[in-house]
Image 1 (cartoon, rainbow, N blue to C red):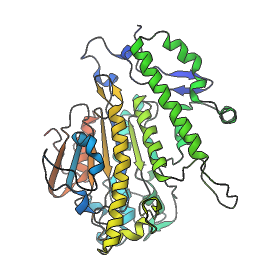
Image 2: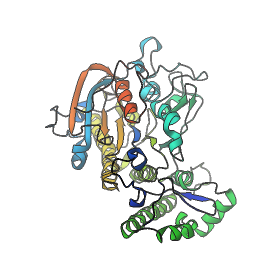
Image 3: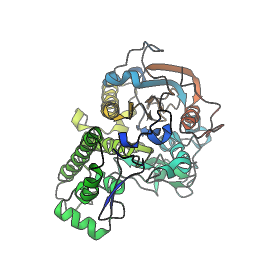
Image 4: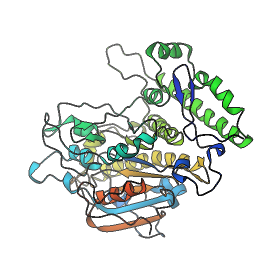
Length: 439
């Protein structure tokens, strides 16, 4: 078996395809270049419209906690979780700016900076994902990957005088430049694997329904001949996963009905769970192949009015989030919260099942989940619904529920996460220190 560079990719007809970590890429000495073998990945998942915290927050703290009703779908990965109570985003509060909590929710979530209240002069701050991407992004083909499920506008007024750019983005390259998310699974796939595939080749591939695997087949066959039996098995599993994603994207695109009087997005699944799981799977493959080490995912835009009719809920999410303690609205909101967590559990279980070196992708990652609103009726920005999954390559003691002093900045967590990406910082945003994640 010949040694293989971690940066090896498969190429063919303009397509480029990364590879998972193979035994042939491992250094002979177990201690040699660990970051090259298994880099730390970082992702941020955003959930809009707050959460019903009574059903979210576990009753016990420490490592003997029981999952709450909303978090119950995470039972199989509880040992890989940190539930973090008491964290806040103070700059999301109204203060002198008044209404606009939903725009501030999403814009402050990863920036920990105060957005300028305007629909034309946009300014907030650089988000943690882009801060990290500037420093480690060159170590992967894509510096970062921004995903979502709902299209959004970058101009106009979407929330009490705040620009729509604030409601549509959580990732900010600079204080004035949002990183637009991609909501079409097929477009994400092409960005990840398309390389310099020109429009004519893309059209030809679509016409013949070619798989990316067909384009790199010759390069793949040459590589496989050099690998040992275990690596050939890993490659087969990886290729099967990629082909399955392509098939699912194809099926999802076929769900869109003919509607000549509507401007429908290309290839966006109608079914929410199908859409979300596809995006999670694409993020997994991006991490597995070192296509990127940093990603964000907006499960919906800030203040989203999506109707979760699959749950028997006909009213829009934002509309019922102003629940005024109505029992039916509270019950429906809890269903939506748990539904979102179910999709997250799917992602974490798949990460954990994906072996990498002596561990797995989840063990080598830090996946933050939540938002900058807690109780949606009061637009509370303290005691936020925040979880962190993954051990960050053994630097995070998971399987615990930690409760912090009220108004502990969420940005303290960002400082601790950046340190684990080998980006030592004294502060980020409005942080006042860091959080001890080692226990």
